[in-house]
Image (cartoon, rainbow, N blue to C red):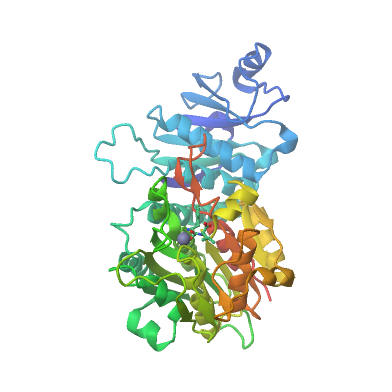
Length: 485
Ligand code: BES
Ligand code: ZN
Ligand code: ZN
């Protein structure tokens, strides 16, 4: 999709269709829309779409009045969704060139960026492996149109394009089935992305990980014929960061398929576990945008990639492994594999010099029980780091909810035979998983994002296709971009 900015009043905008955002309880009088409000045909409800032909006074042939709900609830997050819903509506009608007009009140960088992101995210379809794509149409050109608005709109549109394209890259990775995306193939994708955008990429193989003492990660890989890979992507700013400045580490769970291992999962719904590398895919996607947007601080992404299988060499419940940090772990449940691979990746990130860490992982079913599908579970060992991530997430419309991480919960993580077990008990499953990770992240300021409920949409939305969402790519990009010492 080509993306651009047109500085034009709505009457002069050129496109096959022009989208105008309209509201509930705010009668729109332009272009003959007043009559439709009066008749009740347009109410302005969220995602209500009304397509008009030859609207009076417009150069464009079509006008799409896109409902956005109540004006006092309208924000950039809602703009992103309304733009997306408009694109999906027009796409279904085989329209290929669309402009979205920003009224003066919304002609700001934030709204322009949200419109572009909404459009690009709405364009994505998880249909890569369908041979018959006749039902899947594409928008070729998307323009943000504004009569006024500052000079910052151009940069905002460009940054939004880069970020949303990176998010779609993440979604395409997360959507790949596990036979076509093994740990090594995930590493290949990361490597070619790195080459295209000028990042360093290093892939650690099993031997190297053994040398580094990553027994926790390697234990998970035992049950699969597919070799594991620890993918490291490095971005360095052009100006060498001064001594003692921040170095952000982005760690993502890269389980290319999670059968549960010997503690095998039930068959029903297991196919969804191809998305268990969504956290890793998000960090790779974030690096794709970071490489282009060039924040001031160095950023390193680490993606431990494994397949969790119950092969004859698989680790067993009761096995004890030694993590890179030296801690011993009793593997009570082989299905709690994400924390085992992240333990070594977090430790290695610290060894590489990361001063601040964020991890994203489809870590627990328990976080879905706690928060449903609308909020990422956020855990932090440091208040300032939590605030940074919460702020970035808020600005990007990626909803996150702070969860407790207190020593009281350590009572749930006791092992008689090793330093710690890999699972807590029945209660607070998302918290005990985070407490386990904390053992390996401390004392480095760190945020853990449990994205098990938010990385996948089970049903399509008006603004987004069913399947991978690409969270939390935008938050990670903003976190890096907004970092200031
Ligand atoms: N990948 C799963 C988490 C998951 C479960 C994501 C359901 C999405 C939906 C993770 O590896 C896992 O299996 N976690 C276990 C942990 C348990 C054994 C303590 C879980 O949540 O059931
Ligand atoms: Zn699992
Ligand atoms: Zn898993």
